[in-house]
Every structure is written in structure tokens, then in C-alpha cells.
Image 1 (spheres, helix red, strand yellow):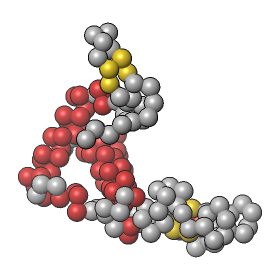
Image 2 (tube, helix red, strand yellow; image 1 turned 60 degrees about the horizontal axis):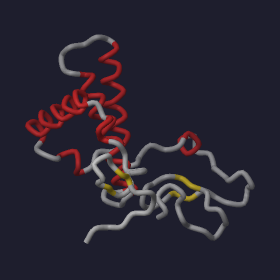
Image 3 (spheres, rainbow, N blue to C red; image 1 turned 45 degrees about the vertical axis):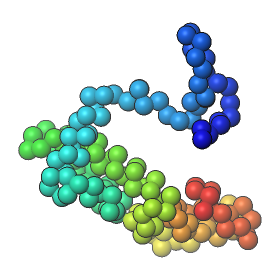
Image 4 (cartoon, rainbow, N blue to C red; image 1 turned 90 degrees about the horizontal axis):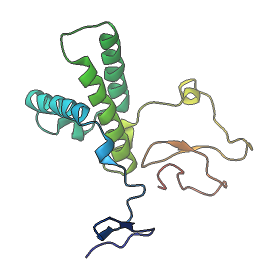
Length: 158
């Protein structure tokens, strides 16, 4: 069964038509050379750590630490490894991990970077002072429900 999608169908000069592609992303625009370099980093990591090791879950703070170290090493001109490739890998895996936390595939405790207010131990309140922020059990993001009794996260809907 083919899922029927809403929106205007695409029509081609050949007469063929296809369902809408809006909001699906445009992979053809992703630079192939950069994609292959990141894939090489995945390949080398699989040899060192085992295939798909990162999918077991790495805390977001550790990915940020690695990303920032590779940025510094790239800026310093170090050539002991492909720091440009490694920093891109860290960014991709950070995003993938965050998305999987939001989807409930990875545990929420991997989202271990507190907001600045939380890190300072401050209470965070909504602008009207009536709603206390809640931490989503699915994506671990702080959100203020629209009404005091609401418990739906604005980030992931969980």
C-alpha cells in the first residue's frame, strides 16, 4: 500500500507525476564529497569500536566535548587525524542522538546538558509566572505547558 500524501503533486515534462516532496528534505543538495568523508569516519570508527557503536548512545555532553576539541585541533592546524572529518561526524551523531532521544529510541538521560538557568540552580518560570517548566520524559527538553495542567512537550509532543 502506498501512503497518500497531502499537497500538490509534482508533474514532470515526460508526463509522469509523483506525490509532493515538501518538508522531506532534499538529499541531492547534500555535498557528496563531504558525505563520503563523514562515511569514512564511520567506517574507521567501526573498525576501532565495532559497527554501529555510536547507536548504543553517547551522552550529548561527550559529543559536544569531542566536537569542540576537534574544532580547536582543526584551528591549530593539527594533522594527526582528519579533525575536519571528525568534527563533522560529531555534529551528525549529536543531531542523530538528539533526534533518537526525542523519538524515545535512546534514553532521555543522554540529553545531559542543562539549560544555563538549571546549571546555575535557578528556578525557571514562565513569563506569566504561573507555569513551572517541565522536563519532557521523551526528549528531555524544558518546556512551559500552555496551561498549568497541560503536560504536552512543545518540542516532541510527548
